Image (cartoon, rainbow, N blue to C red; front, side, top):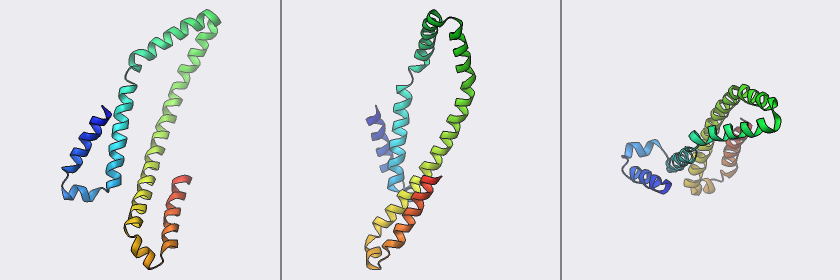
Length: 144
C-alpha cells in the first residue's frame, strides 16, 4: 500500500506545472513523499489500537486486580491522572519536531545550492565560507 501511495505521489509530481515546481526543491518534494507515505503507513498500523487498547487495559486490570487488589485501582487512577500531562508533552514534542524539520529543510536546501555551484565555489576558493554557513545551520538545528 505504501509503495502504491509513493507511486501516486510521484505521478502527481510529474504533472506539476513549472510554477509549482519552482516553489519546492526536489529534496522537499521527496521529503514530503516519504513523510506522507510514512504517516499513512503508521496510521494503518495503529488503526487496530481502537479495539486493541481497551481490550488490553481491561484484561490487564483484571489480572492486576487478582494479584494486587485495590492497589491496581490506584495505579489506574495515577495512569489516568498523568494522561493530560502526557498529551501536553506530546504536543510540545510535535512543535519541536516541526521546527527541527524546518531546520533540516533549510540545511538541505543550502547543501543542495553548494553542490550545484561547486565549480564556482572551488574556482574562487570559497569553501571555508560555505562550510561556516552549513556549520551555522547545523548548530542551530542541534541547539534549538
